[in-house]
Amino acid sequence: MDSGFYSAFTGLAARMQSLDVVANNLANVNTSGYKAQKEFFRAFTASLNNRALTPINQAINDYGIVEGSRTDFAPGSLDPTGNDTDVAIDGTGFFDVKTKAGADRYTRNGNFSLNTQRQLVDSQGNLVQGEDGTVQIPQGKLTISTDGTVSVDGAIVSKLRVVEFPGSVPLTPEGSSNFSAPTGSAKPMASPQLREGMLEASNSNPVTGAIALIDVQRSAEMMQRALSIFNTDFNQTAIQELSHV
Image (cartoon, rainbow, N blue to C red; front, top):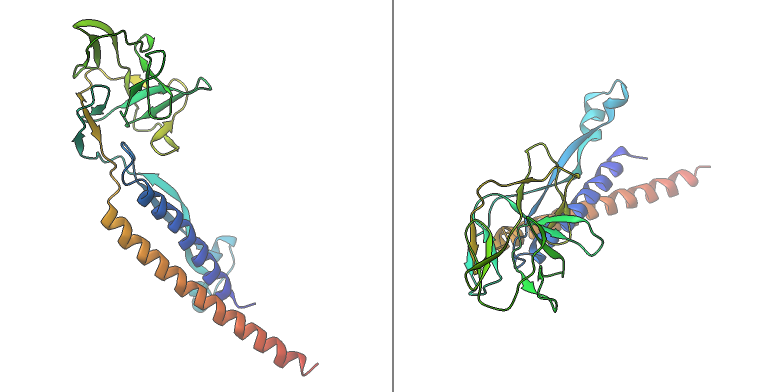
């Protein structure tokens, strides 16, 4: 079988994977705190098998495939909401939330609210963590200061736990705006800068995403046509050969 068929197939597979990444970014352009994903590629080289290749064979069998995606942690714009429980991080850092399963997750999405027990929760119902655990809000006027101190009617009730990670720590996307990290890798920020009544917008650019989507779709269509041509040629060759058997 012509090795060009494999090149076209892997090219199509790579474009389909890229399409998933681009589509997910576009779907989250309005998700607070969302961090866009960027795909990256690696070269598939037939000569890695230590086989001697002719220049033509090497050109045909060296092509790119999607290796994975990385997270773009560039900050989004801070948009005012006027909601006392909304909080944005101005600069680096992550909020710490506790899932229903008891796992810590980290997010830039400060779209918080109060549940029926007047506990501070995120948009998925996960418990927002303070330095002493769950943040319980009594009745009264809520205020969240720039350092994360939570006060009600002027009395301090808690302080939001804002953490950071060393550059070598991998953060794994989980859901639309949450990340998981190795246990014990989160370190409390010494001087977080928070903005009450604001939310960080997604850093996924809708214009750039739309252009990327069109580009990936067109590339995928080209690969599909190439596969169709290869398939037609194979069938014709098979018919011609069979007639001589």
